Image (spheres, helix red, strand yellow):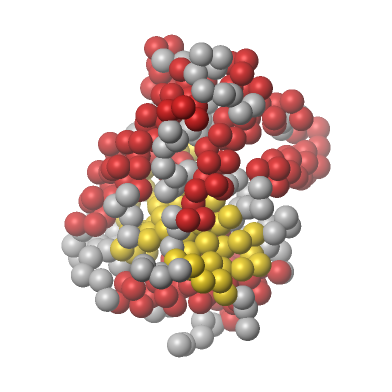
Length: 307
C-alpha cells in the first residue's frame, strides 16, 4: 500500500486548526480505512455510498472533510454531503411548528430536512456522467436558512459520503417512545406528538436513504454524558474566545435544553449502531480514537489497534 504524503496530512491538520495529536490519528486509524475505501471503489461499477455517523463532537464532519482529500491522492473523486445542508427552509420549519409541534421549529431532528431533495441529489450524483454538474444545497446556520447552492462539477464521483449525527439509525419501536428521556420531552412534549413524528420521519429516512448505503462508518462516543460534556466544552471555548460579544452563546440551562432535542436518538444510536456499522471508531472521553471495530459480511466483529 502506498503511503500518503506527510505534507498533505500536515496541511489538513493546520488548515482545520486541529490539535497536533490528530496527525497520529490520521496515520494510525483513518489512512488505513481510506486504503480500504480506495480498494472498494476500484472494484465498483457505480459510485459507492458511504454513511458517516456520530454524535455531536465525535469528529464526523472532520472525517468527512478528510477522506475526500486522502482519496484524491489516488485520483478518486469523492462527493461529501452533510444532512445539515438539507434542512428545510426556516419558513417551512415554522409552518411545521404551527401545524404539528412547536419543537419542529428547531432544526436537527428527522423531519426538519428536505428528504425528497436529499434523495434526488444522491440519485443525481449516482447517475452523473463525466462532465455533468449537480447542484448541492447549502444551509447557513448563522441565518438559519438556505443560501445559494454550490455545484458539484466533478462528473461521476467514485464515492459519495453522507455525514450526519443520525445517519444509519433505525427508528425506535413504538412502545419505546412512551417514557420521556429528559425534561424537554416531559415538559414540552408530554403527549409524545413530537417524538412520534420524528420517529415516523426517521423510518422514511432509513428506508429511502440509510438502508441503500453501501457501507457505514460510525464514530462511537463512550456514552451520552461524554457527548454532553464535549458540547459544553465547545460552548466554553466559544465564550472565552468571544468575550463580551458572546451573548448568543448558550448557558447551562440553554445547553441542556438544546441537547435535549438530540438525546433520544443519540442514545438509541449509541446502543444500536455498533452492531450495524461496517467500521466503528471507538472514542475515549478526550475524543481520541482508541480502536477500530470492523464488521465483515458473514463474519464476527474484529477489533484492530495501531501497530
